Length: 122
Image 1 (cartoon, rainbow, N blue to C red):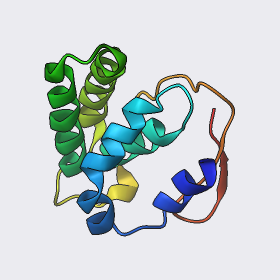
Image 2 (image 1 turned 90 degrees about the vertical axis):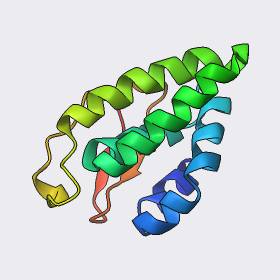
Image 3 (image 1 turned 180 degrees about the vertical axis):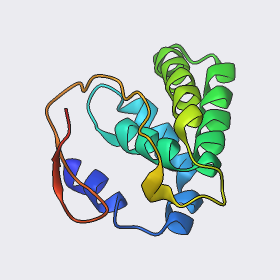
């Protein structure tokens, strides 16, 4: 699973955007078992476009009132809103963006950054 999450960092933004509804749903269904939600928050902290879309999608899952995903979806909405505060506008270059508050990791995960560097995922 972590390998697949790391592979998402190598995908173009348009490809990630295309699969965003499925990625958001999967992140909620595997919230305690996968680092996918952290990838989504990383995207949200670097792009206002992604922050808004992820927030809207998570809010729709909250409105579904499915108990197994409602609480994780509420947490994601809150974290995405925090990420939006640090996300660059669409015209800004992403490298100068400050990072948003990222929730504590559920497990220790190594993440490969878009630049190919290995980062500690905690």
